[in-house]
Image 1 (tube, helix red, strand yellow):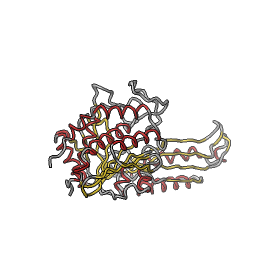
Image 2: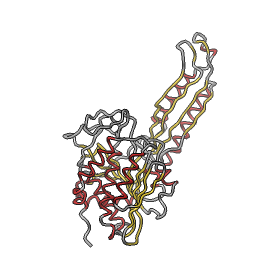
Image 3: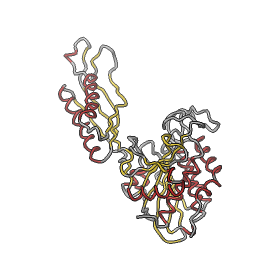
Image 4: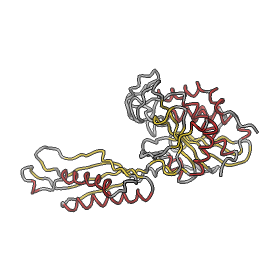
Length: 396
């Protein structure tokens, strides 16, 4: 059977995908509040004859049942926005003050809807099923784990999972893949150091929580530079530091918060233990006390080698081998897509959206972030092709 021309199919609905993206962009919703986005996704999928189910609060799970028996493949897009005031100046800018799709989740959602439309047109020849995961709250506490907990990977059981993130690091028209470690794991932490207050003229009568906390912050960075292999990857960020209430008083309590980012489970374990060990050691040495809370968060994204090869082969066949980018280095950013990959093999690829001739090339999470919308039908076609090839037997 002749394979569909996915780029042609995507080009036919390019304007529709762009319109979807702009509608979502104008009406951004932060994690766990994606009510209108949920309704938009549901309505679109239902018009395609795709079964829908609300999941993980404001998420949507779509099920496209193929005409032939076979496996089930999952495709995922995240839907939430960020608390950022948009400064792009585009005609379809956010209508909501202080909220913006500055990480491309509007593009993720629109392109997956486009892929759903393409695949729905060929459902009779699909051997198996496609599950569409429209996930809430990737930027907050994470929506992947609730989708898994609510049974998203079951009934029917998902056998492989694919997804993508837009990136300004790759030009429009190109897709990047990387096998193995691709995104960092994260462990947010909260540390409260309790000393003893005193008059500023009598520091020896107190236990200065600020001075001790400064030692802790410096020592955590010393761990990175002196206990971490230079060829390994770990980052400890102290993002907030709060303490004291008057200039002439020895501070009795300081709270610092931050996040640990690591690549691989062993480095994650060692770094978490080091943060606790170093903090406790310094605090005890100066006679203070500490409450240390280190949270478990995203596990990191580790792409399955076989699924990465499948995705890479599909992309090269669709766009040409010259449009496939081998991503050399993993990102120290985090992505909760890795939670899905703890349960099923899969691949998370990078979709290029950079085009300086059309829009400034700025980083994700920037108030001026925007994309070249020519990337949208390309990503829809890639999603459709990868899922189709998996189900048609192009798997190891």
